[in-house]
Image 1 (cartoon, rainbow, N blue to C red):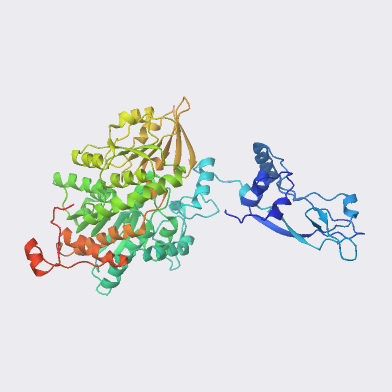
Image 2: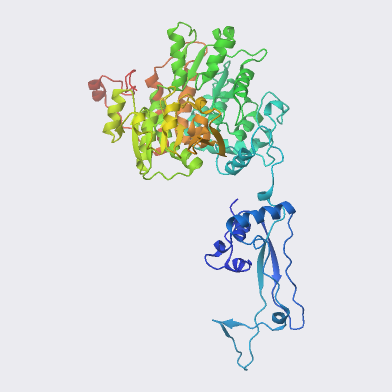
Amino acid sequence: MLCARPSASEIRSCACGGGGRGSRSCGNAAMSVHSVSVKMAEVDLKTGPNEEPAAVSPVTAKAEESDAFKNEASATGGDPNSGLNPSPSPSPELAEMPQTAQHNGEPLVNRDGTVAEAPKMKKQIQFADQKQEFNKRPTKIGRRSLSRSISQSSTDSYSSAASYTDSSDDETSPRDKQQKNSKGSSDFCIKNIKQANFGRREIEIAEQEMPALMALRKRAQGEKPLAGAKVVGCTHITAQTAVLIETLSALGAQCRWAACNIYSTQNEVAAALAEGGLSVFAWKGESEDDFWWCIDRCVNVEGWQPNMILDDGGDLTHWIYKKYPNMFKKIKGIVEESVTGVHRLYQLSKAGKLCVPAMNVNDSVTKQKFDNLYCCRESILDGLKRTTDVMFGGKQAVVCGYGEVGKGCSAALKAMGAIVYVTEIDPICALQACMDGFRLVKLNEVVRQVDIVITCTGNKNVVVRESLDRMKSGCIVCNMGHSNTEIDVASLRTPELTWERVRSQVDHVIWPDGKRIVLLAEGRLLNLSCSTVPTFVLSITATTQVSHTVDGDIREKPKYTIPVLDEYVASLHLPTFDAHLTELSEEQAKYLGLNKNGPFKPNYYR
């Protein structure tokens, strides 16, 4: 909670006996001013010559609250009662003396020679609220440890990715709840339907930064090009993807949705979608069992046969292919946006088992050049700052992989003054890293000295236990690739290592000798698990996904090549910058062998 800075008179009324820097003069007083709710009481300090002064009674708090303050005071070396009591009562001798007005320590004298009496003043004294949120003890720990419960509440207030939460600290699994929206529907499973209004405002904010997608929705919703489409989706559930989902619905599709990441769901956004009638099954902090249960609830519905899949990571496609092969054969098209999911599709294709048309959105120019590069360039810093408060200047970081994601992360860290090393297997990307001013190394050459390790490859076992053992104490380890397999987190779950949850999505893994590493999001995607991502960039990717979904129509083959759709999506976003394209003349177009209206890139351009 952020409270207003106290005035000088309020600070002086604290019985701490210290001067110095205002609120810093008393640890407990500062705590009562800044950390908890306060009540303001007006006290008349003027005492008549024949009146007994009224002593100011100290605030009597609950026993456990007093103990908490005493413990806090003893930890800081202060008086355990000084933060709770206002100024002490004046002595009777002082009370009988009339107060005189002074200027620079000298009494003010009237023209007739009498001493001027001090004017009647009212001062404000701060009292600590007896019902302080600060001192509430969680009574229900449930499946989480006490430290995790406290750290979760301490970060939810400032991290959108942490998602808005109730103050009730409800530990009941959403699978055990019976919830209905205002229309009486219960075909969803989320954290709390009561958060819907808050989530709707989040979605409305996102819509303002997604002009192209909104323009596409407005342009095509009258035609309903997706009428008859039954789309089952598995993506991150955030305000930005909610705009994508509602656009598909506006274009005529029936949608059912689950989350592709157990930490990235914004609970309030899921509530808003459920309130709007969407069948959504997701909440922040799902277990692995919950994750697959939610996907199955999306798919396994009596009387509902999906005919399109919109996937991010390939988990949904894999689940339908393995568990419901007959359903998979009836799918008319798959739209996949991640490198991991595309890799899985290529594996199915090579094995001759991919009997469904699939669209590789990940390799589209709008995804590679914008989402992967610019989005990660901004969100990597946001994720690291929110979780660790790290200072980047002078730190040594190693970025594993120099694809578009790695390029964005490396550029961001370098711009903040970090010393950046890069690991890479591809000679072309490696040469790019060298010419961009980064030193190309093997991980084992620098793992003992670096302060930050970031994986961006989409591969598995990029950082293994041997490397983790050699890292110095305090090293931050995180992943910016989609899959959670890049860091061998499973090797850290052994009896000799201690896990300590210090914040939401931040764990200390402690070795027997006291060394510890800082593991973020348990090796899952950092930016969407621990922070947020730029909405405008996601508008580009979402518009590409919708365009591919509409173009890959459920009744016929795609009508356009990828470059045409990429350039169309890009052109929709240019008006935001008041940008004006130059047009080719007929002679120039003929000279280049192009249509003057495009496409301007060949099919193989990436």
